[in-house]
Image (cartoon, rainbow, N blue to C red; front, side):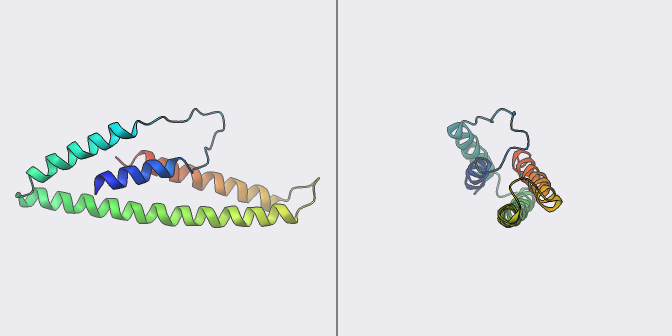
Length: 123
């Protein structure tokens, strides 16, 4: 399961808008990440008879599931904000941007940065 969460998180990082356009994109070797996830899973399977270890695994799985739900909610909110921003931009004059448009853009940037940070610090 961890392998699938890692792959999903890595795929979502491709869709997040960078907060600073001059930042360098992060390169990730997917094969190496999958290999590490498989090794981690193999290690965890060998110790599954220990009740303390089972509790830790259950807690880790719950945290990962909660994190996944929060990321999904944040990305849905991000999509909604982008749609609202597009509507506001379409309504504005070509020479004037309203404060609402600027505030929406800042809110989108802040939320995108938050989602990106959550994805980076997950593991």
